Amino acid sequence: MAAFGTVFMPKMALATFENNSWTTSSIVPSDKLEFHPGAHVLHYSSTCFEGLKAFKHEDGSVNIFRMDANIQRMAQSTNLLFLPAINEAQLAQMIKDTVGLYLDDVPSPPGSMYIRPTHIGTEPAIGKAAVSSETSLLYVLLSPVGDYFAVGAKPLRLLLEEDGMRCAPHMGMIKSGGNYASALGPISRARKECNADQILFCPNGDVQETGAANFILIDGNEIITKALDSSFLHGITRDSILTLARDAGMTITERNFTVDELLERAQKPGTEAALSGTAAVLTPVGTLIHNGKEFPVGSGEPGKTTLKLRQMLNDIQWGKAEDKYGWLEKA
Ligand SMILES: Cc1ncc(COP(=O)(O)O)c(C=O)c1O
Picture 1 (cartoon, helix red, strand yellow):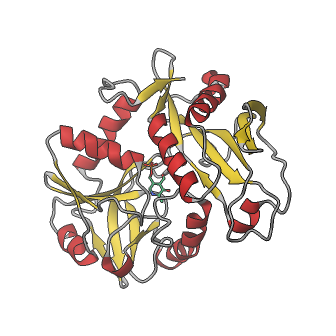
Picture 2 (tube, rainbow, N blue to C red):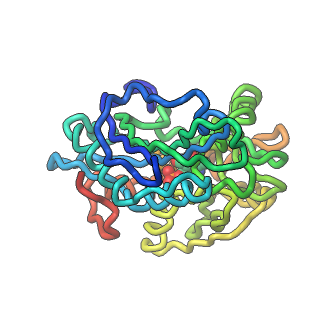
């Protein structure tokens, strides 16, 4: 399978916001967009996006996972960036229309169709550094994908970064390109210098998230993860995993915790850590790197609770377990 996110379906749904209203969406070729080189997004990063997946079930049906939650998060990102408000019903229809064109192309599990709604400010106005774009463009790109982490269930190596932060604290809950740009330098250095897969951002010791996934710590029957605030992305996979774990009788503790506590708990043989995200699903973390020293998490191998929760989520997504939370919507 090609690298994650490098193959695209040839058509997509697109709508524009002009003269204070949204145009009817249309299906257009997905290999080009036309807008002015002075477009707001190119200069002042007025952009947000979403990432969700559609899954093929054994009966041939195609099912989109938690579309409503992703649309709500996109509406929130849009509002926090002062882009023109999206029409949530219209975006839902655009997603269904685009996926509906390619039902036969949705890969079977463990593959899926990755859906990337994107919203950008298009007003040609390079003097508007501190003023929002009055026009925008919304489109829904599709990319058939396999497993994001080609290494499969091989536990990840995370560098704990206490000095920097992923992005400005008021921007963390916005799924916006600028946040990824802000994290790129540190992550590139961590890869090169420590052979780390990701950075776990822990500004002033506060354990937050990595560049593209949330972080959870599993200590016996308890899951500990940072409580929601504006500083990090409110992952829909995080919410799904916590829901499944709670219903399976685990204790869910959403609170702030420090690097010291993390390293102390990681030393216990049964401790597990994992990253949650649409692409990562739930990927085991085997090693934490801190001040030049390496600390295995528990045994350093993929944890059994991590693998069990990952399976429970996949079973719902793949139509092998009852969708009792109503997370799937037929395309
Ligand atoms: C920075 C960041 N945190 C967390 C997540 C997880 O969010 P979700 O579970 O909604 O995919 C993502 C995206 O996958 C992300 O980019």
